[in-house]
Image (cartoon, rainbow, N blue to C red; front, side, top):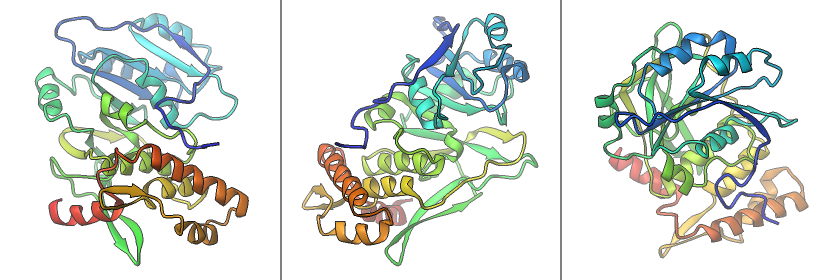
Length: 321
C-alpha cells in the first residue's frame, strides 16, 4: 500500500464552516486570502477589518480553537469571511489546512497569511496585484521583517556538500530573486499549479519538511518560487521556531525529492539505493522497505512530471540564479 498521497487533497478533514460570501464585484482581485490563526478570533477584529479594505474575491480564516465561544458572534459580524474550524482529534498540520482552503476558493491565486504578522489596510492595490500576477510564477514570497523591523533570513539557496543537499539562508532580498521555499508558508500561490503539484503532503507533520517537500518538488517539476519586495509584512512577536530535526518526516521528503535521478530523460529511484537507505534510515527493515518502495511507486506514477533531479537543480541554480 502506498503511504504517499497520489492526488491533491486526498485526505479529507472533518471541520465546521461558518459564513463566507464571494466578492462578485467586477473589480474584485483574482486573489483569495487564507489566514492561518494561532490566536482567538476576538483578538483579530482589526485584522479582519484591514483585510476587507482590500478588494479580495474571498477571505478564509482558519481557526485553531473549536471551543472559541465568540466564533459564531464574530462570523455574524463579518458575514463575508468564511471561518473554518477543524474538528480532528489530532492536530492538523498547516499544509493540510492550506490544502483544505484551496478547495474552498475559486480564484487563480491564493495569498497565505498568518495572524502572527502585522497586516495593514490596503496593502495590495488592484494595480499592484495585476503587476505581481502577470508572470504566473508558482509562488511569490513577500519580504518579511522581524518585530524589530530587521529583514528575516528568507532567501534560501541550495548547494551540495559532501553529497548532501544543503540549504543556505540570507536576509538579503531583491525583487525577483529565486528562493527554494516560502518562509513560514507565507506567499501568493498559483492555485492551479499548486493543485497540479499535489499540494502539501498530509503524511508529513513537520512544518519544515512539509514545506520543503512541496517546494523542492515544485522546482523539480519545472515551477519557480520568487521573492518580491513589492509587498512587505513584519512579525508582531518572535519569529517562529524552525525545527529541522531529521526524523521520519525527513525520510519521506528525502525519498520523494533527493533520491530520484534522471538518466536519458527518464526519472527513477535505483533499487541499489535501497541498501544505503536501509543502513541510514534507522527505522528497521520492514519500515524502511515499506517507505522505500512506496516512494519508488510514487516516482513511477509521476515520472513524466519531473523536469530535473536535485543535482540538475543545484547546477542550474549556480549558473542561472
